[in-house]
Amino acid sequence: MATQKHSPAIKGAKVLMVGAGGIGCELLKTLALSGFQDIHIIDMDTIEVSNLNRQFLFRQSHVGQSKAKVARDAVLKFRPHISITPYHANVKDPNFNVEFFKEFNVVLNGLDNLDARRHVNRLCLAADVPLIESGTTGFLGQVTVHVKGRTECYECQPKPAPKTYPVCTITSTPSKFVHCIVWAKELLFAKLFGDKSQANDLNVRSSDGASSSEQAEDVFEHRKDEDIEQMGMWKKNGATNDLSSVSAMASLGLKNPQDVWSLMENSRVFLEALKLFFMKRGKEIGNMTFDKDDQLAVEFVTAAANIRATAFGIPLHSLFEAKGIAGNIVHAVATTNAIIAGLIVIETIKVLQNDTKNYRMTYCLEHPTKKMLLMPVEPFEPNKSCYVCSETPLSLEINTNRAQLRDIVEKIVKAKLGMNFPIIMHGPALLYEVGEDLDEVMKKNYAANLDKVLCEFPSPVTSGTMLSIEDLQQELSCNINIKHREEFDEEKEPDGMVLSGWTEATSVVKDDKKSNANAGSTSSASQLEAEKNNEIESGTGKKRKLSEVSEAVNPDMSSVAGDTRSQGKLEVLDDDEDDIFMFDDWESATNKKKRLQ
Image (cartoon, rainbow, N blue to C red; front, side, top):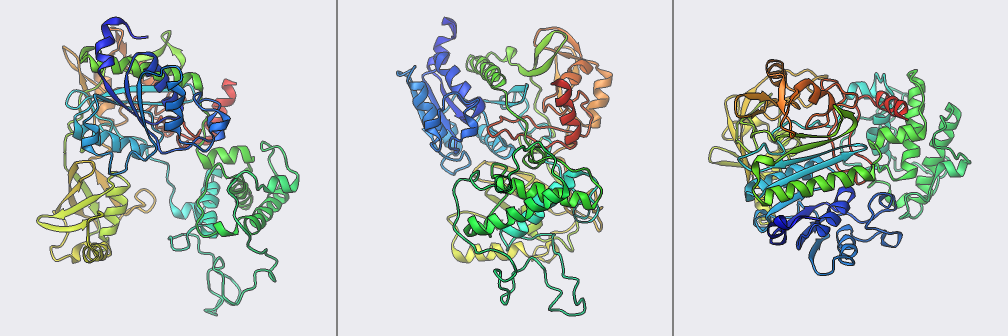
């Protein structure tokens, strides 16, 4: 419970919570018990059975209902006189705009994906509302404070991107089991059951009658003269809503998901899964995406990956292991969520009292470091190179003679910069815009622009061109300086373009006497700075060796085994669905788990 001196700041505060999952349930409970009177919650999810082991405001009878609404009802049972307003909606919906965010004194994030976090960060900056970020993964957790102009924003430091692999490695030269999983999940599953209009690098051609154009068709394409039943396939049937009710393992009498199947068993599972998709879920075919909670999909991907692994001499894996790789799964710990929720409330009270000197970024560690499981660190100053809060221009190397505007929109503006409703301008010329208020003629013009080569616009986009990008919903704008480049390394630069200035920035925090490098930065500049200033001010008021802090934790929890410069980078997120991040090296992570057990 909050003390009397905190009471006025707490009772008069209007708080926005984003996320009512693992952290959100604990946070709402703690806010209510701490005396907060006006709480708003946004969450688009509904309750699933897998949530019940750690999201304690929910019960079996709540499965399928709105998380935000059920959480509100549960808390009002023991705090009936406070106001809790739930929104069963996506925080990226247009009605949650800057004006909406301005209504609140502080925003508390308990999200489970990078895209939504970036969106909320930008709205908080535009509305000038403090943001308190948080995340957990297993026994690790973090709480960070972001106040415009005083501390770094959420995007001042680079966030680890999901691991990607060159297409040629996946399709031709796999050397790790994860390559086989990516092939089975992203290519084969998508090709067989996904949207046929989507591009797919898996195009297997028939080898029979190679000289015949008729025989050189994609073997995955269904020909009009083919009779599926006569080919030994099965009639398409209805769909089922219960993704766990149809199982190839159950049909074949395989019970233990931790068993490693033989090649024969994998083949049987593969064929049985294919049969069940056609028999039981035929209506879904053509619109499916892989879901780690879809038992049949996991069985299909596991079997396909193991069959491919056998062909390339790669060790086979169990369904349990394959599901962990395909679904990026690390299991949640309810106690960590409770600890992080308590730390969020502590920082919220400091923010409401404008106690800037005592703001702390706190990291929850798995093992004690210097007898500490909670590592408090003073917040870092805004990164002057951050394109989000400092409006520093970005640089894009691209072949302007080949690349289309679509490449910039999809690979840069949306995928990397996280803009939802972008406007792209070249000087006074408007190249691209999206919005519900556009008429049909404008929509067609902008759609046509997407397919134009950059150098072929009336005002050509060439080397030296400065593009202005703006997102009206986020009230974010930035400039991109275009640099023409002829060739790109297919292995290292698979996008065919290189964006600079959005991940390579360093951040500096100052104490009363000198500047110290951000312990969590992975850039070479900050590493050099860290070697010069080998100490950092901790929340306890004592100087700590920077190496001790970085060995234990960094702002992105970017190491499992303690090496902040290792290849396996993590982004700590609230684990709503038991899936948080991708391990670059799954085997080393699982080995570590076994050692801990």
